[in-house]
Image (cartoon, rainbow, N blue to C red; front, side, top):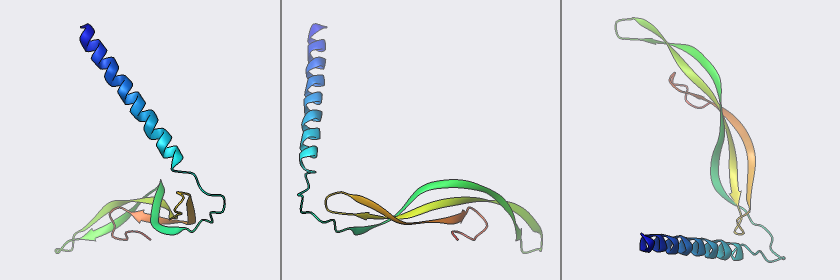
Length: 109
């Protein structure tokens, strides 16, 4: 029992030391020279928030002329452009919103 406890303690200490080393080395890699001027590169679009806007009805007809009323969920999606510098600084630009329709066929508008 004591051997297992000692092994468990040793593994735990090794994990703690490894974690501390990785945090220290990561912090050392983020030093930016004072003369650095950020040059941002476009990384893509980020969807960062969604808000339910409700539902609306839409109509579907089959080959026989039968009409069915169905519901489409509408979500307001917030988007923004992500720009990143080599020093890992991130800027978000051009925020905008779109309406995403789940079923009616309008898609994103």
